[in-house]
Each structure stands twice: as C-alpha cells, then as structure tokens.
Length: 196
Image 1: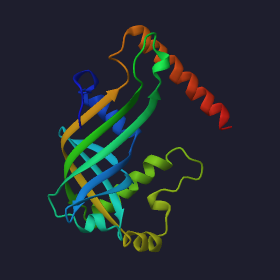
Image 2 (image 1 turned 60 degrees about the vertical axis):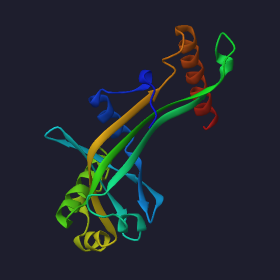
Image 3 (image 1 turned 90 degrees about the vertical axis):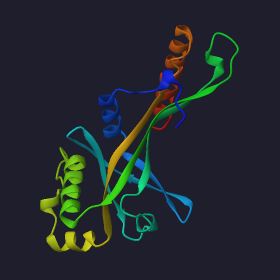
Image 4 (image 1 turned 180 degrees about the vertical axis):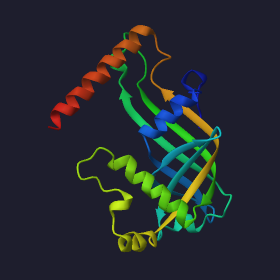
C-alpha cells in the first residue's frame, strides 16, 4: 500500500487495537491468476511476539480451495473514512479523502478440527460476552456443532508484514486541521440525527 511518511503508523500496539476494533476484514488471494476476495470476521492473537489471524470460510467458498499451504495472502482491514471538502479550508485547495486502513500480509495455514473448535469458541465468547442469554460454544447442542463444522474451513494466517496508514489531514495547517475535525464531527452528528 502506498503510504506517505506522515500517514504511516508504526506503533504495533495501536495497530493491534485497530485490528481488534475493525475485525471484519477482506482476504485477498489469487485463483488461476485472478484476484479473489472474501469478507470475514477475523481474530487477532499474538504469541512470542508474532501476530496471527484466524477465521473460517464457508466450505463452498472456492477461495480457500485454491489455497496451497504456505500461500501468501493479503488481508485488508478498513476503519472510518470520510470525504473532506476543500470548502472547509481557509484557502483554495482540492478536496481529499481521509481514512484509516491496515494491510496484513501473511502465510496461510489450515486449522485442524480441534484448532477450529477452539477458534470458534473464542469467537463466540468475544461477541457474546456480556449479552443477556449469551450463546457460547458449550451451550450449543453437540449434534448442531458437528453438522455446522462440516460446512466451514478454518485457517490461520501467520503475519509476515504489516502496513498501516492513518490519513487524517495531519499534514494540513493547524487551522485547516481543526476546521476539518469540526466539519466531520458536525456531519457525523447530522447523519446520526437524520437516521433516527
């Protein structure tokens, strides 16, 4: 990903926080020379200083079927983004787009059945935690779990490279930066009001 220096994020703790908060990602790989992508919720883990991502495909998804073990894949995590009008500046300039994005490169591996069960249990715990009548792994009927497990393929991605960009107008003059923040907050507030 092209990242000008002033937008590059190198703080790995910040990157991990971002990945946790924006866990619905896009996995990109190649099938017969063509790029293919799937949108999936992923989990992030760190062990011995190494990041991994885990998730699962629907069994019928052809993307995983074209993977070979040890294949490099790209995973794209996208955060908030917004159009920035040049009318918000105190001088003539062009508009732009602000965004937060992280690209992860890594080597794909398939999970064993036990690894997949553990990953799914952790996924349910993460998203059901604190809910009234939470549905977690050990509350689901065994026969249902066995049937559903046949319909998915679990995977792990061992992260080899991280590229993170927060393009948030931090390269602008302080007065423009402040104006952009105020306009974006106002637009966000107006959008929330109109959607009620």
